[in-house]
Every structure is written in structure tokens, then in C-alpha cells.
Length: 258
Image 1: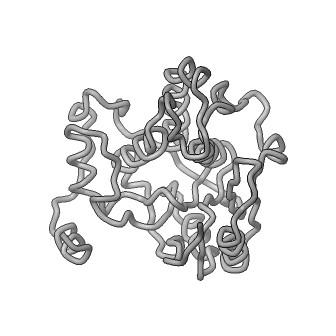
Image 2: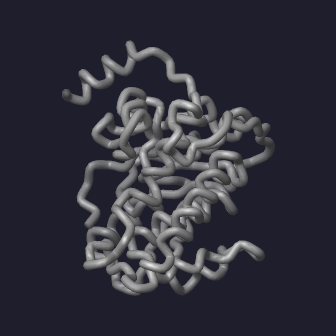
């Protein structure tokens, strides 16, 4: 099915209503929590480069384009400055050093969005200011996160079972994983953070035996590509779909970045 047909079909899909009992094998538990947000969302955009390897020329160009476009402070998190953003009493998980470089980025976006809030983006090209998206989120005290709409059902996490079926059916209420703005310390980010750490606890013994390479494709590395990001983030988008805003400004441009 083409993207246009998917959009038309999504427009006629019945409105989603979360029911925790529908997903007995999922980490999703209980009814959505209430939380009234107040105050400004930090006007900062975090991007992460988790290894000591140099950026390619294409990636450097993407970073410069992003900095010029978004209109807010851009903080590049690297192994050299990461310690400056670790919150007292909340160290990185013991398994963090053993993650692949990709999964380190997956981990850090959750850590940063929960503890600090503001924006996160993959290092890709952008052409529009993010300021209106920050302003829209600040004005909406009943919303906790804004991002670009997922590309279609092919982009959702392959969790299996009723959860995957609902993710595919209601993909249009999901946010893509490449860039977003979050209020810190919301039930969404807390449940994201808690489940991430639960999965890290589970994988820790095998991570120590088989640390990841850049992409996590080395023999014995135990964590699947989307297992500590999309498999958590997309289900939480379903659960808290009433707390989400969408902004096309946060969708990266289709320009080479690797």
C-alpha cells in the first residue's frame, strides 16, 4: 500500500482507545497517568555522537545544516562531555559502556528527554526552525511531546501480537523516532526510562560477554536493532496518544547524511 492510500485509510480508522488488558504480554501496564504540565520547555536540542570515531563529511554537513535551521541552542553530546549531563543520583546504566554506538544513542535520547527535556534529533538535515514547535508545546499544558508523524505502518516496531496489529492500524497517532521535543519528567518519559532500564538489566550479563560494535552486528551481541527504542517508544505513543502533538517542522529532509 502506498503512503497516500495509507493516509486515506488512517483518516477512516476508528479512534484508538487504550486498553491495557489487550496487551497482557507487553510492558504496558495500567491506565494512562494524569500529569498537568506547567512552565517552559527547555530551548535546547540534543544530538549525540557516541563514539570516538570521526564524523563523515556528510554527517558534519548535516550537523551544520541542523544548527543553522532549528533556531535554538544545539548541544552535541560526545564521550568527552557526556558527564556534564548526568544527573546526580541517576548514573548511566551499568550496561551502557557495552552497548553498540547506535544503541548508546538510543539510550541517551531517553535519558536526556526524561531528565532534561527539550529537543532530540538524529544528526540529519533540517530546513525549518523548531521554535514554533517549542512554542506550541509550551502553550499546550495537556501535551507532553511533539514530533513528526510516523511514515506509515512499515515504520512501526515489530512487537508481535495485538500490540503490533494496533501499532500498524493506528500508525498515524505515532511519532517517528528520529526527532522530537519532550517535557521532562512526564509519565511518558518515566515509563520509557523505567522500561529501558528493565531491559538493560536483563541483557547486562550477555552485554558484558559480547559488547557491541558500531552497529551491534557483531557475533553474540544480544540486543536487536529496535528493541530498546522503537519497541518501547511506539507502544507508549499508543498509550499516551492524547498527550502528543505533531509538527512537520521536526521532520528531517531527504538529504544524504551518512
